[in-house]
Image (tube, rainbow, N blue to C red; front, side, top):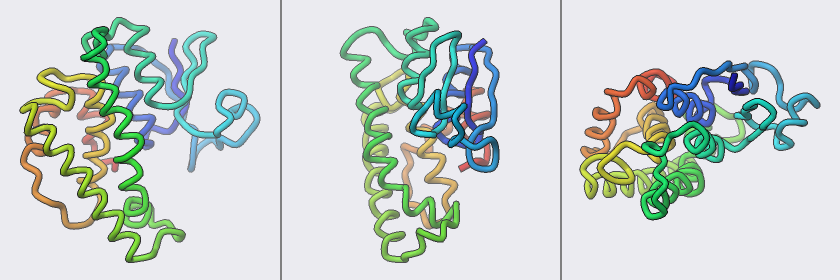
Amino acid sequence: MLQILGKASSINVRKVLWTCAELGLAFEQEDWGAGFRPTDVPEFLALNPNAMVPVIKDGDFVLWESNSIIRYLAGRYRGEWLYPADPCERARCDQWIDWQASELNRAWSYAFLALVRHSAAHRDPSQIESSRANWAKQMAIVEGQLQRTGAFMAGEAFSLADIPIALSINRWLETPFEHDALPAVAGYMARLDQREGYREYCRNGTP
């Protein structure tokens, strides 16, 4: 059976859990990371030298990096409806998956660590505001894309791209500051609420 190593409160682990829900995959999940089993021990480092979650073990195959994992699962377990085989359609998914990891994550990092994680190393008010403003700028890009598609991030149908993007939107909504009005984003999250994986692993009260 597929094994997922990583605590379920991690946004990156939840990408994998939600993908499994969409694909109907059975799995065993073990809690690793802060507050649980440490990732800097030899046992874990042998699987991922970065000491980061998630890691999956699928038989003898070991893989880390959340976006690589969700792509692998969709490709391995007949998830073409989720991650299309057509190069153009797949590229549309990939651009938003990669953008979430590079631009969107980088924008929210400082504000989230300050306001939700209450990190002692993230208390500079000017940097918090700078992060919040940059986060709002990236969220405006999401809003514009959803206005264009009228449905989901990569087009008319739900795809793998929606999983990381929706998790970041959830983090935006759960972080305590004044939020800009984003009607297309609100409609998008309401559409996603029809999906069991979204309700269990995304909009479930966990930032």
